[in-house]
Length: 113
Image (cartoon, rainbow, N blue to C red; front, side):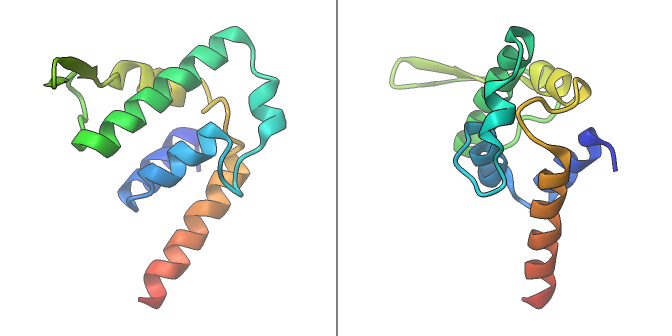
């Protein structure tokens, strides 16, 4: 499965929060060494992907449109174009085999429900 497909599958399974935790380095599926070794371009893509995931968690999905929402005078934006660029760049900040393991675990848990 491609990196892009892995991310799409994780989102289908409702793993947005877990995906963000992996990118932040706060998950058992994170690889902090991988995050620390990113070049500046990959760091930027990772950062924008995290902002997009935070937006999704707070306001819901924003598939193909660039949304802006104002709350208490503060504007929040989604960044689907950066999120897609991050996926196309090979999901810097996440090791694909660890994301695959997270997905398989979620699918296993879903089947046992």
